[in-house]
Image (cartoon, rainbow, N blue to C red):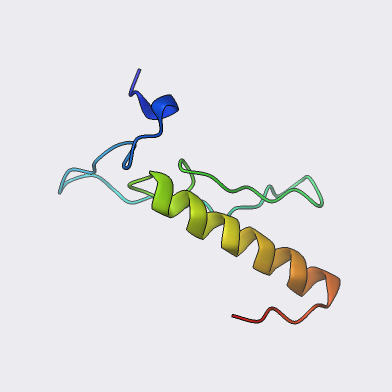
Length: 70
């Protein structure tokens, strides 16, 4: 257990030898599903959860034809 359920700032730390795997936030074979959360982008944690949520909203807006204002 990593203790992330308690709201950890960073859920895990990458070592210099670890490969960075970034999830695109979509599931190939399931339409209209967008993922967001602390486990989507390394090293995880609350700041990345917020960013992946923003990316999910941008994808939805683009798909629906809305202009996303920053």
